[in-house]
Amino acid sequence: MASKKYLELQELSDEDLVTEMQGLETEFQKMRFDHAIKGLDNPLELREMRRDIARLKTVLRQREVTQFTPQQIANRSKIRARRRLE
Image 1 (cartoon, one colour):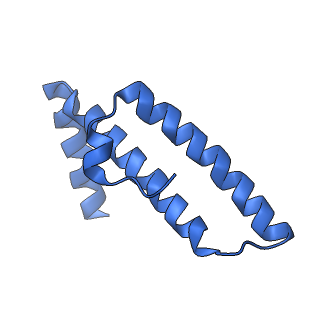
Image 2: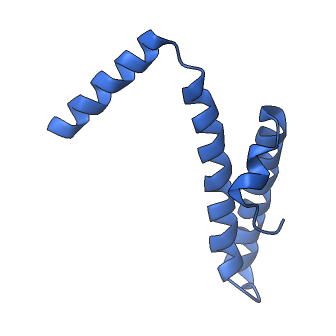
């Protein structure tokens, strides 16, 4: 997969994002194993794949947060405030 940009990811459904992320994580593990055994032609592909996985996880989390109830948002704010004090 070529680097998926943020706008392209916004168009996908939640199920598509989860499927895409699982596929990328599997492919990433395979690439890491191959790199450890024989090396890759371009090891920067690992970094790009990691970033693609992070983009997918970010979009999924943003969608999850937008569906929070007001009570969940209040609890989340309390947790974040407590972390700042530590």
